[in-house]
Amino acid sequence: MILLVVCALVAVSLAQIKPLPELTKPSYNEHIKCWTDWMDHDDPTGTGDSETVSDLKTEYPKTMCPNPTAIEVASVDGISLADAGNVFYANDHITGLICKNADQERCFCRDYKVRFICHPPFCGTEKMCWTKWYDRDDPSGTGDWELLTNLQNANPGEICANPIAIESRTVDTNKPATLTGEDFLHYSPTTGLVCQNGPKQDCRDYKVRFGCPC
Image (cartoon, rainbow, N blue to C red):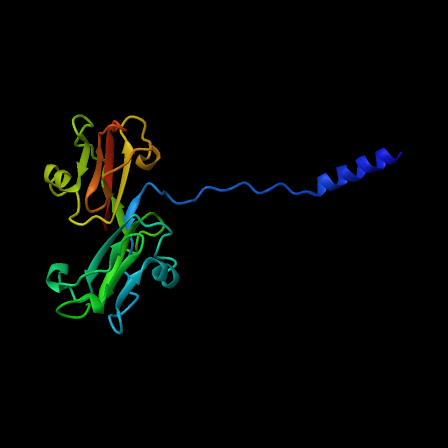
């Protein structure tokens, strides 16, 4: 009798345990690489200009993605980086941009803005239209080189001068490039896609398309 009561209590306890919810996959396409909007968090007063990834995530939570893969820096007043002549303490997609006034020999830091390569839904606020798919190169020799400049030259008037997004898939199975496990030398809207053959990989054949303002 005691055994039956214990078994009944165990059965009730087990029935009350709710199953863990299944993990849902992100709704965005991580294989699409795109530029965010430009962001300017700090001014070069005090110690310098600091546009760090951590600060930008806090100030621009809808603009800044969790794990950017590249960074672009430009001065707010349009002066080229070469003419600005500033030395950067940090300039990468992990830290962001840090310019310290104390590190400058001739002048103080200028005011800078930054943008990052991310994925949807962090693709900026410009309306975007996709080009057709392009496959200019084959993965023979050094690898598969689908460079933006080469594709623009081979297809005049079809690809905008400054794309804001890129998507790449394998030619044979239409698999997103980022899911193939291969390493890419370049994968960005302003460069295109480059997969280099090497001791550890034989690149597959890829096609690319670009997102342009429309």
